[in-house]
Length: 111
Image (tube, helix red, strand yellow):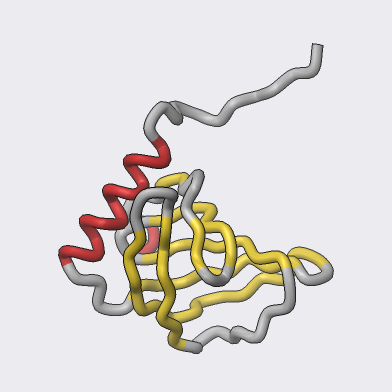
């Protein structure tokens, strides 16, 4: 079993970073959607803030993958490097606060 499957992923509705919108997050990393020019490559180490409306925490991460989705649209896979207990608690608190009330994917149908 790979490392990313040992930890549950959480939808990160309302979380963002300097690289773009956080789409999901776990105890070991996160996935970010970015619109715009990108100058990151797998193996790069970055420091960035993960933030919600109410809180923010800074983390160090390594770029694991960069997938081009279209013209100036990318999905970035980041793995946290040495996340301490305070950072992990802060991230879990932010995820809980932004996902409060989010039970499952919603299907919106036009009437």
